[in-house]
Amino acid sequence: MIGFALTLTYGRKTRATRTGDEQCDPADCLSWLDERPDSSVVYVSFGSLAALPTEQMEEVADALRSSKRPFLWVVKAPYAHQKGGNSLPEGFMEATSKQGLVVPWCPQLDILAHRAVGCFVTHCGWNSILEALSQGVPMVAVPQWSDQQTNSKFVSDVWKTGMHVEISNKGFVLRGELERFIREVMEGERGAHIRENSQVERPG
Image (cartoon, rainbow, N blue to C red; front, side, top):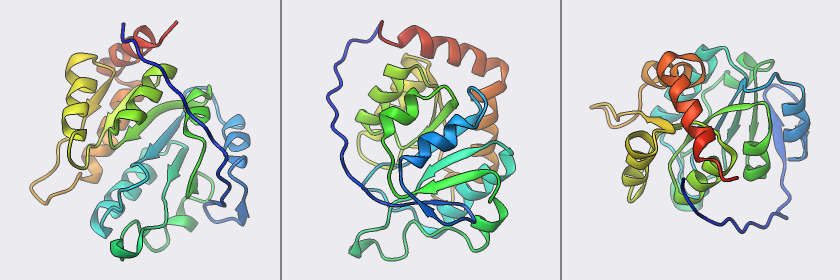
């Protein structure tokens, strides 16, 4: 069992975009999840600081589309020095209009606590890991830098509550690998043990 405490405050208001639809309030994230089956949704967030390059955004987008699973993807606006980062592929919104929801921010702990979320694709920031553990959500670890690599190893090798996706020789995660790991965590034989371990590590 892992002991930890979470102290979180949420109050930030922003706008969310349903793929292929009009803008909506972030609270709609939860309403959108309410309409999805239990443990069916892939939740994706790479943290508040990262701005993924175009190539990596394309790989993630294609993996989500090909998975055929509903997804909730947090894609924040990049900072000024991150020009070109976090750009969705052309046509992605239209192609996934009935499959996914893309938002610039969401109340992450509330999302992870929702019955519809079955998997968390994460950069492995420490807070994100603790939140996922606290809600018993299995993870697909896609670390970006610094201590996230070490954090990812704890998730995959120590606690066994997720799977670590290796970076390709191109310097980013490939769509086929990411899709394969999402499927394995959510429905595979190894994923069954990961899902069980995630519940064991959940406090209380």
